[in-house]
Image 1 (spheres, rainbow, N blue to C red):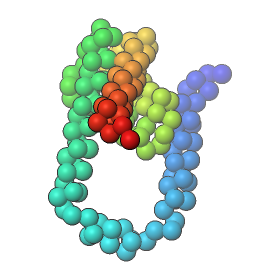
Image 2 (tube, one colour; image 1 turned 180 degrees about the horizontal axis):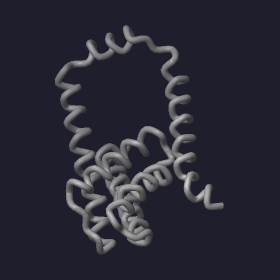
Image 3 (spheres, rainbow, N blue to C red; image 1 turned 30 degrees about the vertical axis):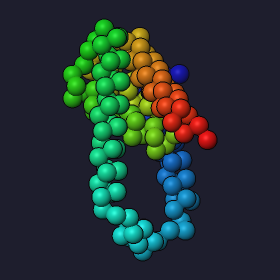
Image 4 (cartoon, rainbow, N blue to C red; image 1 turned 90 degrees about the vertical axis):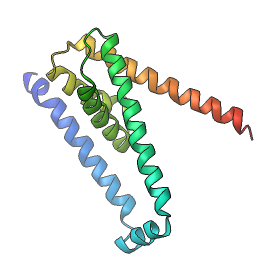
Length: 149
């Protein structure tokens, strides 16, 4: 049982990583570098820069969820740490999937190493999940109001 407690999370993470690599390999097997380059050259550079800026802005906004969660948990961490934990958690969760599990695992590792108790980490995870969900509902509502068809 102690081996499972000690190595279980690491093995689970490795299994998720191998599964993600397998799925990515299967999805991109029909693409070539030439296809990707031609698609990038066909996209206006302003659109690429706008997409990069929106992505950066989104990750900065998402880091505010982690910061708010740590404040709510009673153990505020710095903006820099919130940004690091948030970026790593959302980058992994958005690419692998299983956002609740994969993002929570990353957050647990970061916040535990920064001295937060498991209950406080659970509060941070709950706040980040709730605020992310509420944000999604708000955007969906706005879209339905502006473009009901």
